[in-house]
Image (cartoon, rainbow, N blue to C red; front, side, top):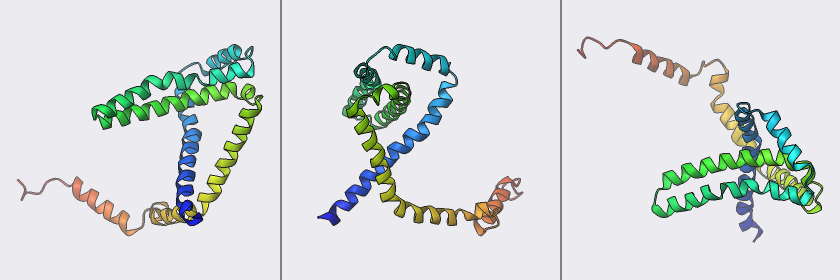
Amino acid sequence: MRRLLKPLWIVLAAAFLLEAWLWDHGRSLVTWAMRRVPWQRLRAGAKDLIDPLPPEGTLAVFAIPVVLLLPLKVTVVWLVLKGAWVSAMAVLAFAKLIGLGLSAFAFDVCRDKLLELSLFRRVYERTLAARRWAKDLLDPMVEPVRRQIRGRLGWIERGGTGRRFRFIVRLRSKMRREPSSKAA
């Protein structure tokens, strides 16, 4: 039975790490987007609104992104029912990005108050432990793949002296040549 569950655990760990990667790298995207907005003033204003709230009230504030994205998720379901799969995936990707940004902002503003709640602290610590577990589970599988990719792409790092690079250079030079007189 344990042998049958291992692939399931690997898939769950990979999905968890993908979400964690999106969270980590989404923050830089959110930060880039927020540079267009007065980030510090917005964050300070949100902090001022949250400070007088008790931790339970802050939990309600942390749930606001879920409520705000509900119409987009209903739209995705509607598009799927109509058979518009591409549109549904586009709206879902947009909702995921917006949700990630809003959740990251809300968590950044609410973290200290939320960690005062013992249940939230336990969930937060278990989430961090699950992330470490998923990374430890997948690292032995990911590292050989990384080495192989680096090996295959090594010709780029070596200054492009490989056979593939020469082929690409020849192909580009043929494409840049003027049309021959035979073609005219």
